[in-house]
Image 1 (tube, rainbow, N blue to C red):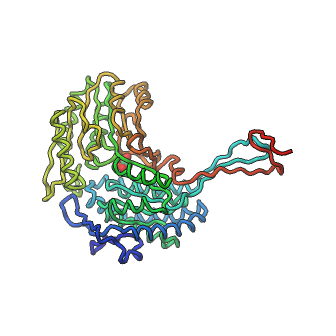
Image 2: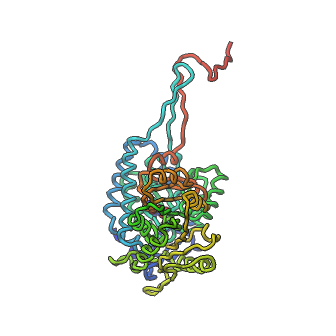
Image 3: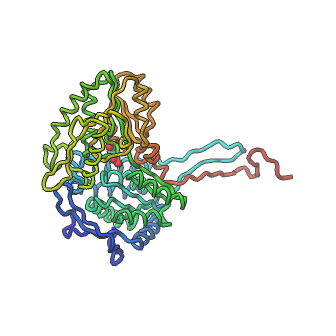
Length: 499
Ligand code: UN1
């Protein structure tokens, strides 16, 4: 598959129903953060179009849920093959649109493929439970049924992997999906949707996996439509609050994966070389634009200067530039606006903290989207620390007791990911017991999770869980069933009602 030649993308996939109902008022022009070159142009899907796509999705879902769960494998296997066949165009597109280095763009596709394999396995293991009944000859069990149409809203930073976490689980469970990708990744999402369209058509399930393009307004049409019974959204805390309120009104299920403000604790007995590698990846990876990126480093006083010295040296050597060049370790931020936010954050830091490394916004290839990985030594706690700056900006804290470090870890409103480096079992377990985050690691970074575990966080992160473990349950509705095979009618709680 080659990227669209016209650079003009339709407002939705399948494209047949887009005619005349794209919203002329939401015109998007996507340029590459690498050098400002034009990537794609499109109109956001209008409310009418979103409604039509949702209707079509509901029709496909009704038929799809009749397919026996293990038989759904066939479509998943073809999707796997189709993504694999298009791996290099997808990698190139992610690099061009998001600015990821090749290794990380490849990693993202791998994550999506892993998710499909996981779901293929799930088609044989989606289980229900049997419970003992207090009544003679009664059989009690619970089973899981699809919720219906699922709306999936994803962010720019993982356009394919986070789509796969949600969409693959959703269809495995017998749902259909209407996907609203970020307006900042139109080409990548277009390539994914063309692949889905092809596979769904081949299996006679056109409309099972659909995509509507656009920004906030298109997302809100999807959230507010009566058709989707579940909305899964990834993005900012503010966006999540709005989605949550709109869904509450209609009693829709929600899965939210919102901001992170992740800390790594470097304990006095840590293996500093191991910690250094993890921290470097956690700061520089995806140019600090993962929701799992390290935002805070809490370092024991006895190793503070040594660790900081090594880290600052490593960061200073980072090759920043065009992510498609082999030597580049860190590409640009997603947009000039994002780089401006970084710059503003650094200037706020100057009044409360000392910039010990980086701090500058750079101009390369005619765009000002590049920034230096930046370390800030906190002199007094200030409000900005509580907010996620989606950039490689890291606050440094010095501590003396483990309790102090854990309370700093938990001090922010978000609760996504956390980590400690220690060689002591008791310290490691005490941290796990007390971290208030959804993800808690010992001797590995806050970022770079595998798909096997449930992914998500507490507090302002929104409480949702996606990907592995038993997250499939969120995409289903639970049915509690009783079969009375006694031939009589005993009542629960031993109630005697009949003469
Ligand atoms: C995200 O940034 O929204 O754990 C997802 C990680 C990746 C996924 C990040 N596997 O860093």
